[in-house]
Image (cartoon, helix red, strand yellow):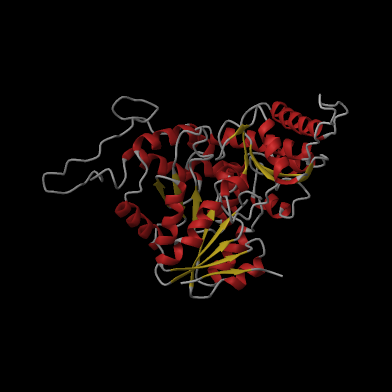
Amino acid sequence: MTISRYDSATSKTAKKNGVANGASFRGAARTTERRAGGSSPRQSRAAGPRPETTLAQGGGTVDATTGAIVPPIHIATTFVRDADNQYRRGYCYGRSDNATARQVEDVLTNIESGSGTLLFASGMAAATTAFLALQRPAHVVVPTAMYWGLQQWLEDDAPSHGLDVTFVDAGDHLALRNAIRPNCTRLVWIETPSNPIWSITDIVEAARCAHDAGALLAIDSTVPTPVLTRPLTLGADIVLHSATKYLNGHSDVVAGAMVFAKRAAAYESAARLRRRMGSALGSFEAALLLRGLRTLHVRVRHQSASAMAIAEHFADHPAIARVLYPGLLSHPGHAIAARQMQGGFGGMLSMRIRGGEDAAISIAGRLKVWKRATSLGGVESLVEHRSSIEGPGSSCPSDLLRFSVGLEDVDDLIGDIEGSLASAASDSRPSRSRSPSGRKRAQVRL
C-alpha cells in the first residue's frame, strides 16, 4: 500500500457571528428542526431538553437507589449471569464497556444529534479505530493540515494495516473531490479548524464530495466541540473528539470519543474492535469526563470570546508576523467558519513571531500567566512552541506559538503576552553600556 499527496494549484465579527447571536446549541437545534421539517422551537421542547440542559444535568438521570443527582461510579469488572446463562442486564466484562461510560456516551449522542457513541481510552485510540474498522482494501483521504500524532500514524503505520492514504488540502473542495476515488475511497477524514494553523474546511461540501463517491465522512471536531459545531447535522457520518481536551476540560483525563450518525456497519465494526483490543474507557475516567461535560457550554463560550479578544488585540502588533484565528476577517476561511461555527470561533489561536524560531521560544519562555505545556482545552491557558513538540519532519512553521485560551481574566492573558514581547524587544536592543573589558555587550537578535 502507498501513501500519496495531492496538492491543488474583529469585534464586529464577534457580534455578527459570535456569542451575541445566541447559544450555538440552540441555533443548531433549530436548524436541524427546519431541515427535518420539524415543529417550532416551542413545540419541539416537548421532545426533550436542550443540549445545555442535558449537559448541566449530566444527562438528567437520578440514581434509583439513593436519589443522588450525581451518578455512581461502577467499578465492577465482571457481572453475574442470569440463572438461564443469559446477560439480560447487558453487562458481561469490564473490558467491553461499563455503566458509567454508557451514561457519558448517551450524553454525547444526545448533544451531537447522533445515533450512537463509543468512548475510548484516548483520542488516538478512537481515531485509529476509525481507520482500522474499515473494510479492506481501503483507500482513505486525509488532510495535510491535521493533528501531528494521527498524521504520523497514517504515514508510518497505516500502510502496514492495508490502508492506502492520500493527503490533500482539504480546504480546497476541488482538490478534495479529485483525491477521492469513487467506489474505492472508504473514508474521508477532515479536521476543522485544523491544528495548529486553524485552517477551515467546508463540512457540507466535504460531505457532498465523500457521499458522491460512496465514502464516509469523519470529522475531528475536538476544537469546536458540539457547542460551536455539530458536524452530523451538516452531513458528516462520524465525529471524533479527543475528549482529553474541551469535553473534559480540566487536564485530568485522557479519553476519546466517536459519535455516529447511524448505528450501522461503521459503528458495529468500531465497537467490535474496541471490545477485542480492550481500548474502552475506564469508569473513573468516564465519571470525570461526565463532570467536565456539565460545564462544557459555559467554558467553550468564555474561551471563544477571550480568544477572539486576544486575536484582535495582536492582529496588528509589530512583533507578530501573523495571527491565525478563524474569527478574524483576515482569515482565509473566515466566511466558511462563520457559516458552520455558531456562538464563537473556538478557544485556540496561533501567532507567528517575527524573528523566527529563536524569538518564538524566547517569548514563550518569558510568559508567566500562560503555562508552557502541551495539550489544549483546559481551564488553564497554555502556550506551546509546536514545531519543537512535533520534531523533525514537522510541517508546522518554526516561528509559530500555539495558544490554548483558558478561563483566566482576558486582560491578564493579553498583558502577559504584551509583557513578554516588550521584554524580548528590550533585550534585543543594543546596550550602550560596556562590560569591564571595555567591549559592548553582545546584541541579542530575536
